[in-house]
Image (cartoon, rainbow, N blue to C red; front, side, top):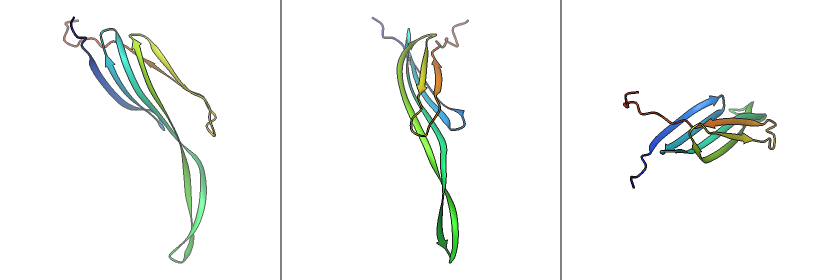
Length: 112
């Protein structure tokens, strides 16, 4: 039996400010093995701290950063879509949903 030919695909892109996705897909004959990491960052509360610098009292702003990461692994057939969601937790008060779809990549030199 002939071994199934696989193709590899990697992508890293920013979906919107503070949201980045890294995708690695291995395309087999019938399925796509999808591995992805979805990272979301946002600024939280900003506090003020005071200190003495060169004999003068100065204030600095110290922001907090909220970070959420979702790791994904799934086998998809061509045309299938995976729904990835995140529910509100802690100070994060919004639902986030993303759809990842698999499509078969056609040969570029097949004459079609």
